[in-house]
Length: 302
Ligand SMILES: C[S@@+](CC[C@H](N)C(=O)[O-])C[C@H]1O[C@@H](n2cnc3c(N)ncnc32)[C@H](O)[C@@H]1O
Image 1 (cartoon, rainbow, N blue to C red):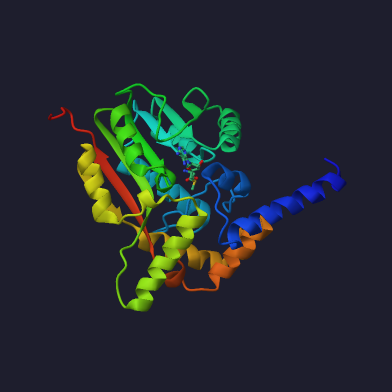
Image 2: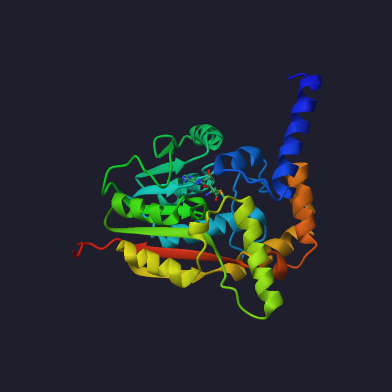
């Protein structure tokens, strides 16, 4: 592309970014958000789009890998499994799982076409196309047969689904009896404390929900999440908050590693820098981060 064509295109992209981030009336649908973010992820070695699990991590890539491993352990990923991974981004987690956990097959579903194309190229370049079958498709209307997979994962994507409940229904349908689901997910925290603390929680959730296309139907805290899994028929349900190992350590690491922000679009970098001036307790006041696991019963009791 010539420089004369590239400059206006860059300008339009910057405008779209600023409009999305700072215009309170502007909301985007999921594919438009991820088209805008494109491949400018903050990770250095991969293209992860998650916040990471920071317990023993030293950098963003390490934290993202650790979250991916935690989810694989939570779903008990093992050789021979057929895994469905929903909302796979650029498929970094699927490549890691294919190489380290050796499932027979991973099927990926992702709504964002631009990510599907890049992810397929990356998987092919790594020689993993036989094991990883990346599809464009929705978490809430899966083109998969009943009882066709052993495991289901959703890594930092289920909060987007319209709705998470419909995804839980679909996952239950495609899981084989005895199959397991594991979800790394973002939820609101219940409004608690004095008026200021309650306001901070509500405001931080409202901002994130609005900008990241989280439907109202998905805004409920841990006990409701648990109840919805139970209502759907799952058993051995566990919904554990891991927020202390996610938000604050990520925030503090970014504060001391501004070089990671260089990989973001300048408009995104500006917004993150503004957020980093505030305390993590304020920025993430209303956000929980959970790891949820459950099992489809061996025999359904009707
Ligand atoms: C925050 S990104 C996480 C990507 C990846 N799991 C990672 O950790 O890097 C959320 C992903 O969910 C996908 N997504 C959102 N809604 C979806 C839906 N209804 N069905 C399938 N994928 C969806 C987006 O396209 C995006 O790839």
